[in-house]
Structure formats: C-alpha cells, structure tokens
Image 1 (tube, rainbow, N blue to C red):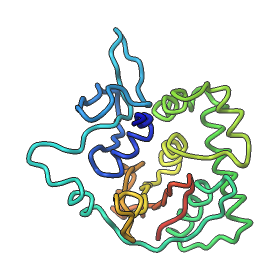
Image 2: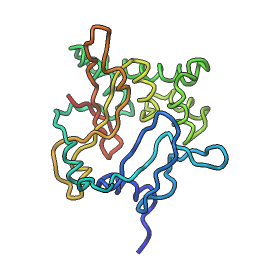
Image 3: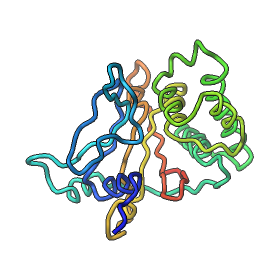
Image 4: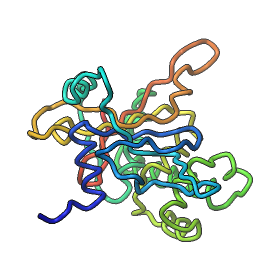
Length: 235
C-alpha cells in the first residue's frame, strides 16, 4: 500500500481529533508524538540546529483525556452561514462583511468588494511598504517567509484575486484590533461526514475582546473555512 503523503496524513489526524494545530506567541520545541511526523511543514530552523516552531502539529491525546470524538463534540457551535463570493477575495470579503455586521451595517456587493480590496492593500502597506511597521508584525512575517520570499509575497498580494490566510489574519486582527475566530464545518471534521455545526480551529486577536476602558467587549468576527479553500461568514 502506498504511504499517505505527509500533508494528507497531518490533515487526516487533524480531522479525526488525534492531532491538533497550535499557534504559539513565541518559538517553542515541537511536541513529539509517535503517530506524528518529527517535523511539520511549518517547522522553523533554530539556533544550534534545533527546531523551533511558531505553529506546530501536536498530539491531542493524553493520559486521562476523553476520547478525541467526545472532546471535539464539546467544541461544536451553531450559527447561520452568510455566503461570500468566491472571487479570490473571499477572506477579505468575509472580514469586512463581518466587521460591518458587528456595527449593524449592511454592505452592498460593490461596497463589500471595495472594502475587501482596501483591507488587502492595508496589509500590503504594512508588510511590503514600511520596514518600521513590518517589525511590529513579526509573527505574520515569519509565517509568510516560511513558504516564499517577501519579494514574491509582495508581488502576489498586489493582485485582487490574492488568497488571504493565516498571515493576513495575524496582521488584520492586530491592525483593526479585531478578535477573529476561524471555524470548519463539523461534517469535515468527523470521519462519517455528519454534523451541521461548526468547530473553532484558530483564534486571532483574543486580547482585543475586552474592548474599551468601559469594559464593553469587542464582538468576534467568525469566519467559516471550508475544504474548498473558501471563506464565508458565520453570524
């Protein structure tokens, strides 16, 4: 039998709950687990030949922990899906649509498209046009340069059909002081393909939930990421 490719193996473990994806505020050693590869695609080279990670795949199964399926079931949440056009801007569209929704504002298609492009260009200005500002977003910069050169990234993000993802969410959450949570459909997580809820897989800008000095919490923008590399909005 052919060996499952590394990426597919990791995704399968994330789906069935035997592994989890961790975002770290600072580099840390990888967590070793017999069922996981020694190095994930997000591995960074550390000093002295060691391996340091800003993001890592780790085992979600420990002694005394509940079964993975039961643990995952506790995370299931239920919302309504607001569809977003799949024109390459979908993540930026979902974000501006969500941020407007939290303020009680409804955007028409033209406003949504223009605001999405403005948000993308705001990320470009920070990462590509200002070295001083770029240094304030080191985590996003590391995530970008793991996969490609900064020069290549800056060429790509200039296009209106640029696909946003982890790096841009790190920038936007901080830039807009906006808490963001990314979910996946429950049926994509379970082996049997059942379930109509949504499971949170990543959170950005949680420090901004407290809001102003008056103590009013900032409402979270909830994004739905599907296996088709598409983002919609959850409300």
